[in-house]
Image (cartoon, rainbow, N blue to C red; front, side):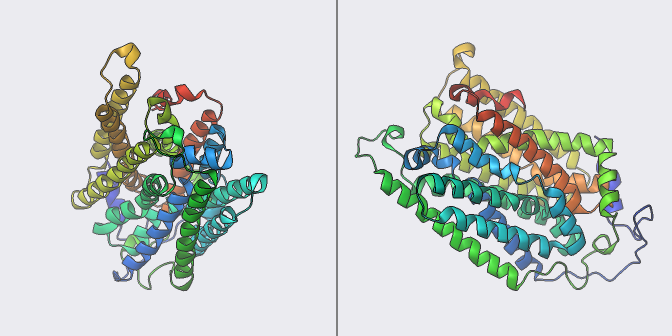
Length: 435
């Protein structure tokens, strides 16, 4: 992986490069609009809700098993619908490339609204399960736009010295939504008595179901409000672009796909991105389930997932701001992040294998190592996106990030598919074998 500084200049050319599939672009007057923050806020809030809906069932899996009769495999499948929703990613990337971000985001928001409505319908037994699975799948269909369009939005609306920061905010809010589910679910939905240590009367099945429905109704209302807001105001692009790169013509859709698949350097970076982020993303979606054999309660597992994800978001935005001010250091930043993730995951796994390694096992060690893994991996996402865009310019940002997020979700999907068959007591050790 070469240094990024040689490609950064290409992203802000005086004239757009001329090659197959591109056209000349004359210099234009640039302008940055204050409304860019409103556009970023609306996009980020939708991403927040998409992440919350995706990660709804994992943090309350013990309660869901009690209330709806789900099995451990059912919980893994509910989380698996997120990666499955990425399979039509080419359609969403084509829509974004041809019609702009507004059309693609409106379609994604509609899928989120329809999916949240389906799973909130208070039916019973088999019909309810089918609606819940269908709702999770529709929410997963919003993933290609929500998780891929951050760099496209930042290039379209933000000046070059704010681009990495805007990319970090737009890209990490879906992760922040997943983190919020780790707290909202376990705090509102009570765990069954067999996962609690307090000697109190166990909550009834009907009460657990009512609390689950309450959270789903609240998420449905929030998604409805954001859908209306995007419908009323979310322009695809500003009247005047913020930079020359934003105004320049890019490769066509077909040429972009061919360029990406034939670029060996891009494919190597994509592999470095997809494996750790996909595995940790899928693993965190069923974190409560995989930590149950380690005697970690539903609430404590939620806090572990929350701090690992929030820490990654905060650290990622900070590193993106640092990358905005000091150009040409993306490769070094990523190497340090992935090195930290490797050391942390090794520490966590050796701790879990204490019967073999004879290392001390304490709650502090388990929590710290697990949280550090999430921080290092999740914070690398916006830095990876910036490196991707600089590597393959003039391929459109949405197409580039669509390819890599599909690969990341493919890795997450394979892990979750494996978890539907793998013995529960061995799940805690899986992620290190592919990290």
